[in-house]
Image (cartoon, rainbow, N blue to C red; front, top):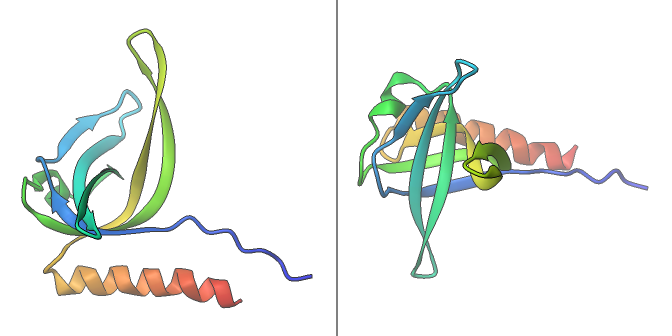
Length: 120
């Protein structure tokens, strides 16, 4: 019997609907949160994206910037007023401006590697 390969891959292209929200967590980890608006069959969808320890340029992302994100879907738990809360988001592995050919090539290579793993 063939082994089932499980995969969690999210590929998004869209526009930021707000500036990057950057903060340092109690652990010292820097977290940038983005709201990416994508369109699926003319319907706008807002997708939260988390970037852990982002490059400096990610912290400067602003409303209207077009991005391509490769990452994984994740449910994150955190403490909130009154208890524990959760959020489903895309945890970005690679973030690239939609017009940055060099970063897009890196993203494409990684995407292709992930799908080649399905054939192994």
